[in-house]
Image (tube, rainbow, N blue to C red):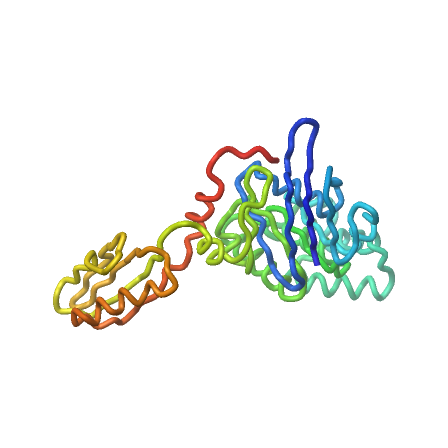
Length: 311
């Protein structure tokens, strides 16, 4: 649905994006994650045809954004970081204007507005002026304008920036719901954003893609340890540092005859077996043995250390 191939983008002597390639499949929510200045906003502008790449190619829903930018924009719904709203209009008036600008009229226009209001949870706000509603609802209005024409692809730049925690949860819920039917790519520097709504992540640093895949997939490709959470029922204090090959063993808690450990071993296909075999040999009953889920913050730090050069 989105195909980016060897894209470079320069502003004068500044190379903001360098040799970026990735694809986004239909019906997925993909997060574009990176520190400030990594090049995320530049990529968003290239995807939406606001900037053309200096080199490389971009197609959205099979349409080349350089050779046919108007058709590409018809296929895209775009919510920039600062939603383009007219505060003096009511929510209904604003969406009426956007629908007409997108070529809708008559009964078809009214149906699209009604459906969009329902989808974004704005039906109860239709008669209120945009400057009278909360920032969270204004962000919903921004989402509404992005989807009113039923685009194939939805591109969101920092969709929860400046919202309070309750508003963030609401907007993430709307995005997750939209992602069931559309291809969504969202740019953010907030790691919790990606963990909350994205099935796949692209990590940018200094204008380049430095990793892509699920968080666990990316972590598995990094050098490091397999880390396990282990809960044992035991009558004696377990000496986990004696597990063959162990790099680190920390006791998290002891409660009665239950002991919780966090154990790190060199990454290997069956590293957990060493923990299980050690436990059984010493008479400890294994109640839980699970791999710690990859910590996105740790992965992010490892991949983006150093100063960014993009914008």
